Amino acid sequence: MATTVERKEYPISMRLPEADVAMIDRAATLRGRSRTDFVRDAAVRAAEEIVMEQRLIRMSPEGFADFMDVLSRPAAPVPEMVKLAKRPAAWEPGYVAKR
Image (cartoon, rainbow, N blue to C red):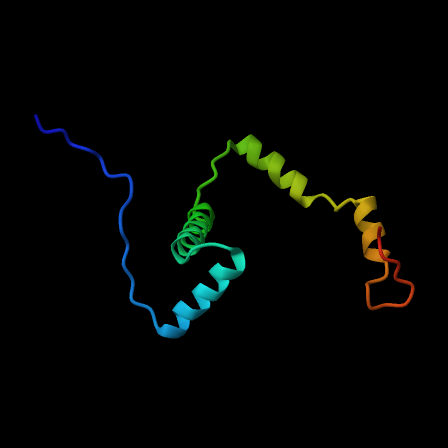
């Protein structure tokens, strides 16, 4: 009785210049990850971004009109953002570190 077991992982092989491998290893070490984990996470993250960029958003004509109406309104200031923008930067006079 032979059973078919579905594979859960698939190998990927690449040829990279030594400098690229050194950079990947350095970054992986800084993150406390293995080279495989680091490369896998980076590749999956990049793939997700590309897929999301290409995702088609569908809406009704009424929904699109509402969406465009909201976009065409003047921006309303967000008090917290205004306060943050007015606060001196760390290299400017008057800066006080938050505790």
